[in-house]
Amino acid sequence: MKRSPTNHYSQPKSIDEYIAGFPQDVQETLQRIRDIVSQAAPDAEEAIKYQMPTFVLHGNLVHFAAFQKHIGFYPTPSAIEAFNSELAGYKWAKGSVQFPLKRSVPFTLIRKMVEYRVKETRGKLAVNKQMK
Image 1 (cartoon, rainbow, N blue to C red):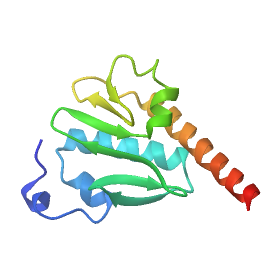
Image 2 (cartoon, one colour; image 1 turned 180 degrees about the vertical axis):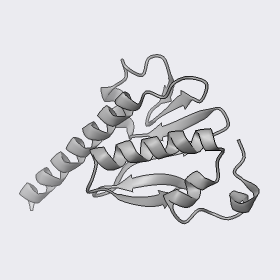
Image 3 (tube, rainbow, N blue to C red; image 1 turned 180 degrees about the horizontal axis):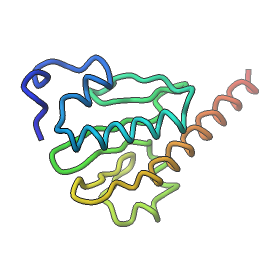
Image 4 (cartoon, rainbow, N blue to C red; image 1 turned 90 degrees about the horizontal axis):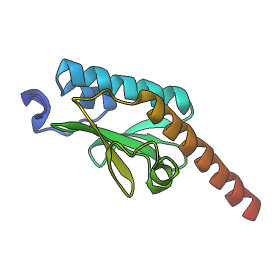
C-alpha cells in the first residue's frame, strides 16, 4: 500500500498526517488503534518516531504502522512475550506483531497489550525513583 501522492515524499509530522496518507478503510483502523492507545494510556504523548505513530510514556510505549497487507503493532518484546498465547494466530517477532488487513483487527488484544505496557512502564519508573 502506498501512501497518497501528496504525502508519499514528505515525512508526516503528526499522527493525523500519517493516517491521512492511507485509504479510508485503513485510516479507520489506524484511528481506532490510536483511540484505543489514547484511552488506555491517557498520559502518553503522541509522536512520530521511526516514521510511525508512536505513543511515549517515559520512553516509547507502543508504535503502530500500516503496510500493504497488514497493520504492524510494536508493543516491545515484553508485551509480545506476555501475550504470546493470544498472538498464536498472527505473525509475530521479538517486539512486533502483524495483523492482516483481510482479518478483523483484535482491538481488545491491542488494548490489553497497551494496558500491560502502561503498568510495566509505571512499575519501572517507581523502581527507578526508589533507587535514587
